[in-house]
Image 1 (cartoon, rainbow, N blue to C red):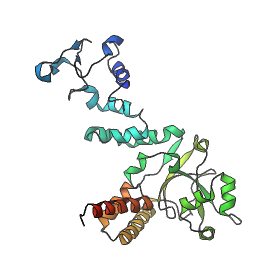
Image 2 (tube, rainbow, N blue to C red):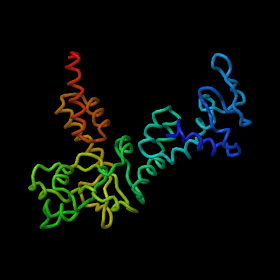
Image 3 (cartoon, helix red, strand yellow):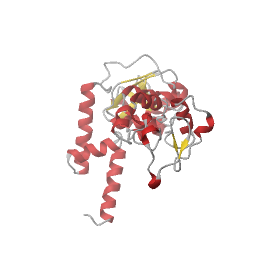
Image 4 (cartoon, rainbow, N blue to C red):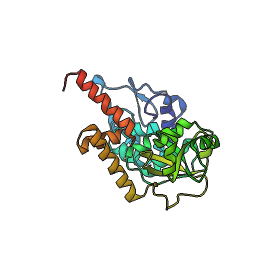
Length: 279
């Protein structure tokens, strides 16, 4: 994140470009860099004179409270480090939660052109691994799971797992299938749509290789359908877990909208409570 280590020097050079390189060899634990570029020894008791110094350990350090500087730094962070930065304080969270910064970090590794849609859970932006993406394939007569696996060079089990299919027969009741993305180059300059798929039962960044979303497909995420879909999933989780709405929503949120992961987290917590004899 650039809060410590070798990257600190680069940040300071950008903030104070006129300082010679040798003054940036900073010993944070023993000295403080003042405005003249010299290292000042801390006062007795570990307290320095903060009136004329710039220090990463000083709560008045300009770079840590200036939104413009924070924004310029956060725009360069990968999505995982951006999520960590959001946990530091309220100011950092407000800057790191900016939609433009989140979208840029989400697109950057895959060189996506655009990401369209608003996720129902803020945790959606914390992960942009390849498994977050899927290709939308509209089913036509003659399609089978095996033929689609060959066409897109993926595993049959991968298609079934993503679409929550127990057998090949489930394909006949659907208008489309989500296909796992196996080749990162498919995302290059692509546009993805954030959708809550009613079969996958989680939010996915969906890529359309030909055109865009078809408004006639009832499995696509719209503002109203997304809310209804989320409500159905949470209701189902609440009944299965035998918990209240708040608990079901909590596990849904920490699992990034993945019911399987939510049940796994819930089971782990129950197991821990039983082992700790809290029940």
